[in-house]
Length: 170
Image (tube, rainbow, N blue to C red; front, side, top):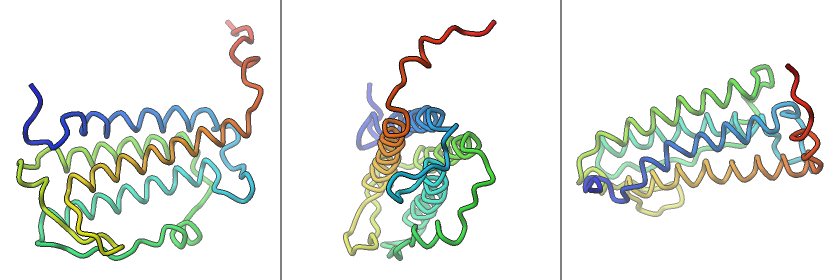
């Protein structure tokens, strides 16, 4: 029987599984993690951004749980990227960090009582949103970057079958 305390019974599972797609997609482009196409973000930058954004989402969840109708300021993800992005850590490390951060997000949401999902906040664009919407936004954000990573893979590696059919060492 579905958990009645969660607006969508699959939400928590979808949040948890979304990291697996990110991890897989990051592994596909790991050997070309810093390459950019037409000046767009590299795979490494996507993972760096996902980790930072997940922390912003967590803070917004905490604020919504603790305060009546908090108002969120706009987060400057481009400025954050320009100021703090560093290519030193490997993309596989960033993917692991994202899995840990997403687990923390899920833990924040898991303990909510049924009425907790209805707590509201004002999003930076002025809309009033509830915690269920914020959780879906976190899921959407990961899936959006998952598709961006797959797009990068498709652009950087148009010939893929030889890699799969190559004899395995052993």
